[in-house]
Image 1 (tube, one colour):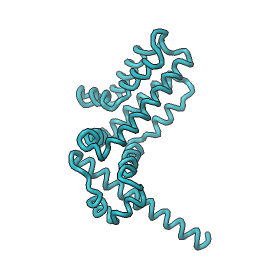
Image 2 (spheres, helix red, strand yellow):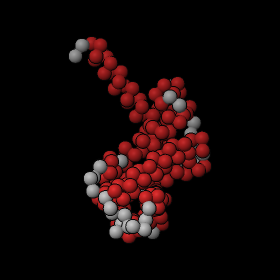
Image 3 (cartoon, one colour):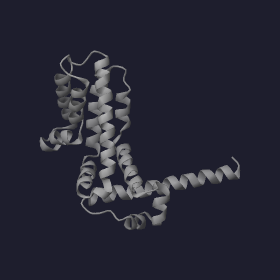
Image 4 (spheres, helix red, strand yellow):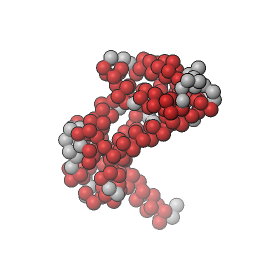
Length: 204
């Protein structure tokens, strides 16, 4: 490796380490004080960087919160949902994604609850990020509903639009948490309940 490429690699590694350090500080901040406004000056000091560095890496405050949300998903194992969605059988897509979703929610339950609380209490922080994620989840549920219809698995009295709405409710964090926290059900049990609900409501 020539000197130029070596220096470029070192700079890239240093930039990624800085990015990860900032996100770890944000994660700790959200998990310990979700009701308080996040000060980028405080985040920068804790991470040992200049405030301008945050903007250089994430471009904007919104970009930072989006990155934090995806950092949370990565920590929770979002790739399990991606794997489930890729299954060629729509019924297994449904079952696998519900089971993987329950595992992801359970893995980072407290911080996920904090993120949703922040979105409600501090709209300039996480509201846009959560809204974009919810839009993406809605699109994912429409894709699943259409796959179920295309494979002739939907009940004849259920439209794709109705199936999308039902799946959107069943796959929400709040639905998961009502059973997991509210009813003290283990994540595996929650997944079983949600799969049963979805299949009875939607499938032939």
